[in-house]
Image (tube, rainbow, N blue to C red):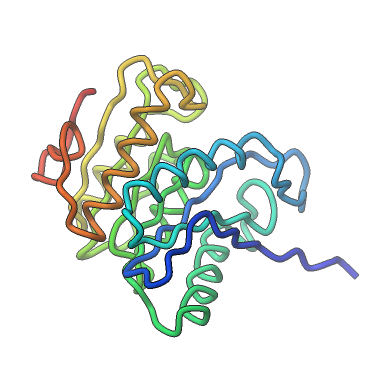
Length: 227
């Protein structure tokens, strides 16, 4: 009998009386079928500073969690989207009510955020260097705010495909695409931009905090912004 591997939800910052949730989603390709996610894998560790930056921007009003998926990669029978739905169920049970939620995902986590953005609690989606197919972006995200941030020098996740998916999402959602000049997939060299944009976006869309720079342009309705 195959062991059923469960997703895990890790608290990054939980204030006493949060008014919103942010769920941070990692990437990471599969090396073999059913491979379990390790808390020590680089794609998971990379999201720790993102979660920390979001918590700082939340000013003690946002509960921030990191989701560890059931398995690595994108299993067609149980995708990371199922894990996001499970995580939101867990948060609803823990806090006794559904709260406005922002999904922040990197790589395959960015794809999961875009695909899961139609779940009832979700108010906004920040996809960082999302690994997508050009045909992605067909989820109905009516009423949601979506921001895609992609490095111009990303040779792992195609900026062109991400831009096409973002345009597809425009059919139902307000979408903005920020192109980070010279940015690569790991988001390391330009980490202040990627992390900062995600944090500013989450605080603005969930709390109404003022935004500046490229995020402000996105929230003002501009689709393509160069940074």
